[in-house]
Image (cartoon, rainbow, N blue to C red):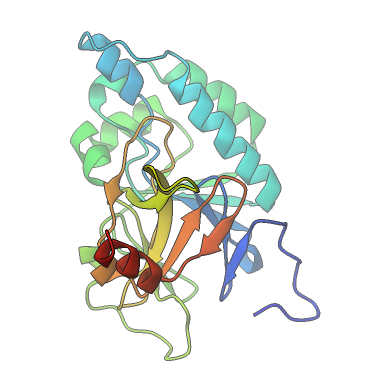
Length: 246
């Protein structure tokens, strides 16, 4: 809840307990000066190009620039990546120059990575040697009564305050929802946050070249859609009614 001494969220930011959901696929905890993102998948485009798949060269730079925008806007002093910062070892090999330039823009930023399945595949040792300045963490990671992991299964048995809006955070699923357009001729896939019935908040994928997987409405207790300029809560009942009337 926002009190008289609380910071005022910018336009478009959705407030959920002590968490702020930002358009652009990030989440902050202002009281702790933290920013959280999931599934950045740095190096994915380079990995694809190395395998003969033509994709743009600026994908990694775009992801890091968008991350810088959120860091500045949220005034974060700590960035926590909820897994899959890296796509694979092949893409990791050429990241050091762009990573160094980006880190130089944020010299005082504390950076933590909860290892995800793609990070583990690339290996923690390779990440530490190629991307200096990272603190690597195993899941689940607990910080100030909030549990964090890459996959929700790592948070299966967590418990917390009965009045807490959110008990934990995770990524991995790359959730998207099909939004009907105004002409009702076709749907538009939009990344989304969703709160499941365990009060685990699932974050959308942050990376610019990650794709998405349609969210199961049965798993959603609450649904928050990134509509480009804002994060808006949308009733899952409305989506269910639309599906029944197709």
